[in-house]
Image (tube, rainbow, N blue to C red; front, top):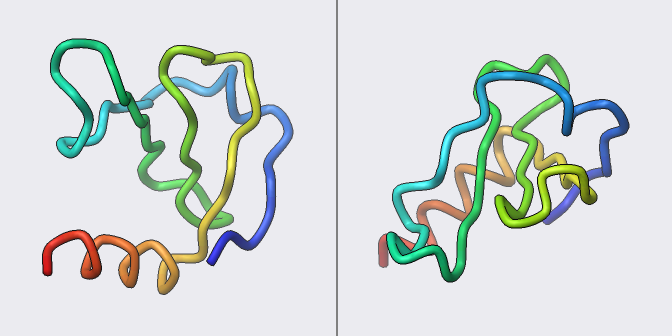
Length: 68
């Protein structure tokens, strides 16, 4: 489902914590909306770490699977 990784996105602003993340700081996923290449996703505990970029279709499929 992952299309690519993205260089430089860790320093971009506008990251938001996913509503599916653990509110107690456990499993925290951040998403960057409005990126031209797709939907960047990172681990909020490692903001300078790797970023995965999902296609819009891939991300929609992932969210749909979570909701089932």
